[in-house]
Amino acid sequence: MISTQIPKNPIKRLDVFYNFGEGIIVSADIESKSRPNLTHYTRLVIDPLTLKTVKASCDCEGYTFRRHCWHIETLKQLLNDAKVKEEVEKTRNELMKIEEDIASWG
Image (cartoon, rainbow, N blue to C red; front, side):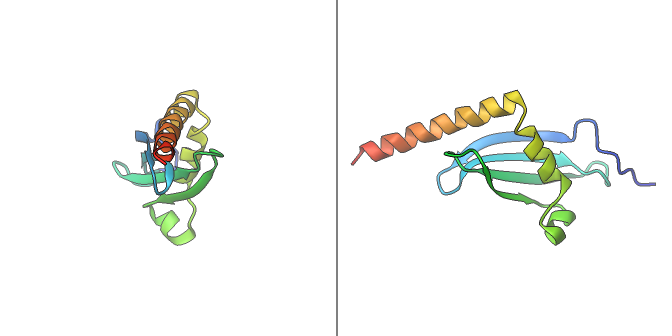
C-alpha cells in the first residue's frame, strides 16, 4: 500500500539566495508523499521589490503534467515562517545593496 499522507517534515533542505537575472531564489528538496526516500527539487523565484512569487518549478511528475503540485504549495506556505521570512529579507537587503553599489558606478 502506498501512503498518501504528507510526511511530518517533508523539507529535507532549504536554501535562500539571489540570482541577478531572476531575483531571490527559495529552493528546497521536499520528500515525496507517494514514494519513500524520494525527494523533489522545488524552486520559487521571488521579485525582490514586491516579494511576490513570479515563477515556480518542481521536478515531480505532477508539476511536469499539470504545472502545479503540492511541493510548490508547501514551499509557498513555508514563506510565511518567521525564519524563512528573515532569510528572504536578509537576501533581499544584500541584493539591493549590491545593485545600489553597481548603480553608483555611473
